[in-house]
Length: 249
Image (cartoon, rainbow, N blue to C red; front, side, top):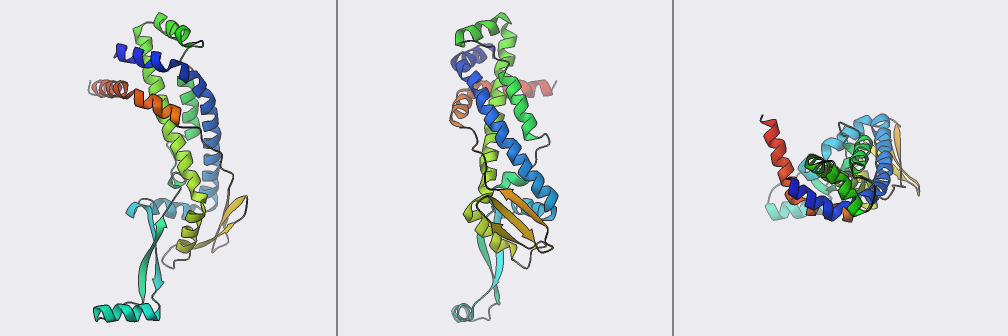
């Protein structure tokens, strides 16, 4: 593993330190996401749990029951020769922004702090200076640093995707689908949605409400992280096998 770790670090080492600035952007996005989650879980917990459960059924597809119009009912009866139900189930679309309803066991913001700590394992300096400083610490230090940095970048990419996915909750299409679903009489929690330039406010029948901001920060660019991860496939496999071997001891 030492040779694989060395080659991967040597090839990408000049990319790791600039990533710390990107991680600061990621932390800002994550703190915003966690603040929005706090609003939902605090102000409309029953609806938040309902939405969370909905994202795990039928691919997150929302359905509503609506009454058949007289004409459509007659057409259906004529085509089947049988009396038709007054109602039909309509698919209105899948829930977007699922990461908004999913909390991590450890807060994502704390995870980002750990990611920054891992990136700081790479010594300061240009590429050659940093590599020499690592090599002076011995082969084990090179391997440990490579493993920690790769896992950190992998997790950073996952969190960045969570932030981007959560922001889809406030898209016009998703809000329109939720408005239809919120009026379905089958729902244990019914609600309406008011949208302004700055906020999306969910209002329940009991008048409790949650106001979410429209001003979601832009998550960091994933392209550099994805390139580093893609180049670390061999190292990732070695780390996974090593971890599996250690767990069996």
